[in-house]
Image (cartoon, rainbow, N blue to C red; front, side):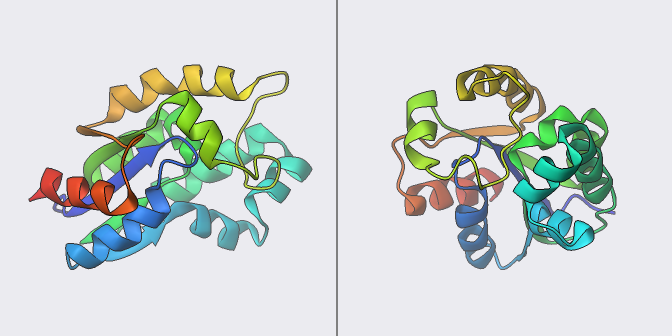
Length: 166
């Protein structure tokens, strides 16, 4: 399989889904959201999976869903927690170019208003800042390109995604 996909990774609120759809249109590609795949496979909302089955189950289910992907010519928006799985990230890297949509901590906090309902993997006793600091080096590790999104409009981020892959 050729690496014709663009994989978006980043913190909750970084614009993976929002910008992904628009980048797919601009690049004449399909769009795929792994959070929607996971919800479909589990027949449950992300937060409900976390609440009823726990974080370990959620991360395992996310890894299985992501490693099952076999698609081409697609912009793939991932769940923010996908970077916890080396297996999932190696699979995504084999499928395409990984673009990290970077947000600073304060911007992330300003964008995610529905933290208790949006399905964010927050380990017991961890704060949002702990999660941010834990994920930061993982996003950097897997990224082929990094786009600084904190000051960007959606349109500016989409433009930078398109530039990164053309």
